[in-house]
Length: 338
Image (tube, rainbow, N blue to C red):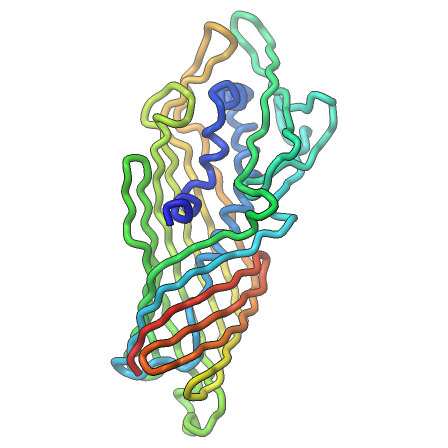
């Protein structure tokens, strides 16, 4: 669970927790180059996270009656494809970066991939004493290998029927605080059953409803002891916000039901690298870089959903699969009344 929550917050850490010489060189080459690399490196991870965290907002198009409720423990996983693991690093897009073999571009690992074999770049910087300097550094690899193909999320969710064909939902991850990490997640949703408003609702074999849902993650990671660069108050702050708009249809049988729908996910994840970083230029000189950069990624995707739900008294179990830019599947263990 700790690894899961760390990933939700810290996809940036593998970029900036390399050896001190690597970070010094990358930042010394220019904040603009460091920011460009970090943005391309991180985007697939944060995009996949936004898809993963939006699974299992519903398990039926039939909303609960007034006073009906359900408590759920939900585990999701977005599937990582090969195209999410690598990106094209074109040196023409950088000011002070090149490959040792003079290649114009190479496919390098994102936070979800790995460089096998290792890939090196040369960074140039201007030392006030020694003039133009070049240093060779190894690009950071990601969390991926041949078996790391899933981005998991997990949370607790509640749903309550308030009458009139309307159901309200809430989900959260209890606030986690350690010496280095602070993380919280919450979300809220509103589901409205359109067929509930029809005179012949009881005769229809299916229910149809619409859902609007919002997710938010706040996180902070203290880097002062782990970044490998001298400085003060070094940290990452992350804010991720997503919206889900979903049309849902489901059967209305007593025990086993099937559901599906068409939805649209829109979201943005922003990570700020904050604090003071004392970067060495050459042997004897250094400079302070304060709050170096912010990186962000956005998703805007249509998705399709299919799922099934088993209901045995107050116990319910559901499983679903989503087709989108990141395919995802989810399992929910639910306890409810009515």
